[in-house]
Amino acid sequence: MPSTDPAAGCAPRPARRQSGDRPPRPGRSGYDPEAASHLDPTPDAYAATPFTDQCTLNVQAGPGGHGCVSFLREKFIPDGPANGGDGGTGGNIFIQAVRGETSLHKLARRGTLKAGRGKNGRGKGRGGERGEDVLIQVPVGTIIREISRHDPVTEEWKKRRQAKAMGADAVFGDEDGDDKSSKWRREKWLLFPGGLPRSFTAADFPALPRPRRSNLSASQPKAPISLDLDSPTEQPLLLAAGAVGGLGNPHFVTKSITRPKFATKGEDGMSLQIHLELKILADVGLVGLPNAGKSTLLRSLTKSRTRVGNWAFTTLQPNVGTVVLDDFKTRPFRGTGQHASTPIESFTIADIPGLIEGAHLDKGLGLGFLRHVERAAVLGFVVELSTEDPVTTLKSLWREVGQYEMIREMETHAESERRFDGRRDSFEDSAGRLPVDSKDVAEPHDANLTRSKFKGSPIRFQAISAKPWFVISTKADLPETQDNFTKLQQYLSAVEKGDAPHPGGRKNAWRQKIHLIPVSAIKAEGVDRIVPAVLELLDGRSTN
Ligand SMILES: Nc1nc2c(ncn2[C@@H]2O[C@H](COP(=O)(O)OP(=O)(O)OP(=O)(O)O)[C@@H](O)[C@H]2O)c(=O)[nH]1
Ligand SMILES: [Mg+2]
Image 1: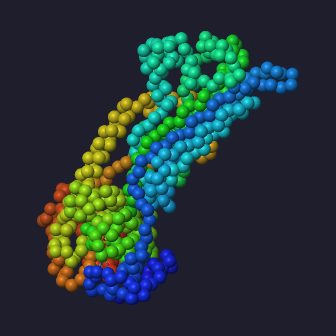
Image 2 (image 1 turned 30 degrees about the horizontal axis):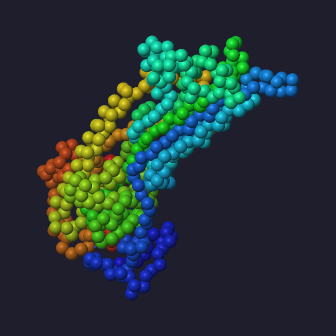
Image 3 (image 1 turned 90 degrees about the vertical axis):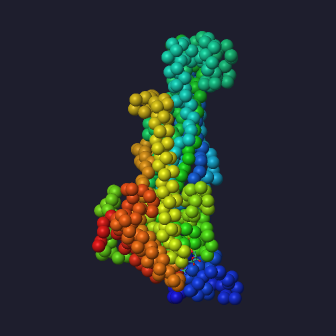
């Protein structure tokens, strides 16, 4: 076996152990145990990075700053007109899918993210500064679902509408509507600190201005949020717009009140509880029992440094490797989607933890990791030839995949019903938006951000059994594996011809040309046949 290291030059190579101090490695037959290589690495030569694929976040848009009560005061003008500035708008919450991120663990640790509060208005008509924005960066392939929201402005509108519907004069009354004489709500107003209580009687107090939102809020996604960030977002997408600031005292100058000693407080920012779920986007997803050789195969096809070990559940998190194609002449085109006419330069392979029989009953690591191959274009079933019956193994793998597919279909159905109910209950106008006060022109921090339209796609589910699939029979270097290979070959050709039912049990499952590729991943033998087979399936056309 040649001991050349394909990873050399791209990662620091661990110090080679002396043959005397290397621990014995059980169960490796037909292979020289002393020769460490990229495909059979020493136990410390693997990448171990923290990984989380789901988390819940609380995000809070910034509250607005308060309006200011101030009067012009100059030499010879002791009691000038009102000149208090408006409060600044609160910070916004943006989200962006970026290529460099691979996990949600950093966000999972944060829990709550709050945008900055707008600054209060100041004298001489100076408006308060905007609050600081928060930008949440997530990996490409993250799905965002809204769990709950608290939007003080929407609630205020709701309350007013209800009060109006009841024909009450209590529109501006206290929450319980008992104290009708109180037309103003103390908590909404900012009073001049030096003023005497009698100067703040309800009698000539103006009506509380109607609740407002910033004009940026028009580009918020509709409630309830449900988005799939399946491609990198060039510009950050707005999740929650900051609340508007309060009005300074010049807004309340009337004929009768020429020197208003009050201003309004800023609105409270909306808060959202969202669930983030990362579903890795790879072209090929590997599915197999634990210890089948999936990670070794990934190492032999790519420069991945995923952990390999002769025990079940060596891999505890998904790993993605990239196969770079250097044969420029025969590179096929991507057959579908927006990149239909771009030639394939590389493709990605996802290796997930092993699936065991009964994974749908939460045995082993359960079915959860299948979310990372659910969106793969092609599924690669990795079956060890040294098992007793590879056909039974393949069938049981498909059974688990079928169970997962069923669960996902039910979830998708339930989700669309929930969304429908959410829309019906939400307080929105016919265009699905709350009215935005045209007077309220809160200048955005960055003009580019206003132009960003919400580009995330709606969440879709693609039937797994309809995807093209192929089988890689590993450990073909081990003795007495020929019979198992023949058995598997016969079974797959029967499935292809329709003589045997599809192992997933679905009628419309894909069964066009099921490749069976025998390999010895550890010796890197036969793996070069995987690339053309994958390209053929990705390309969606048969080269035969
Ligand atoms: N003889 C032989 N051994 C192999 C081959 N491929 C993998 N192995 C060995 O099989 C064992 C398991 O390999 P892994 O690649 O870790 O298997 P896995 O499917 O990723 O396992 P999990 O991560 O537990 O799901 C290791 O000891 C490998 O060295 C092969 O082609 N031939
Ligand atoms: Mg593995």
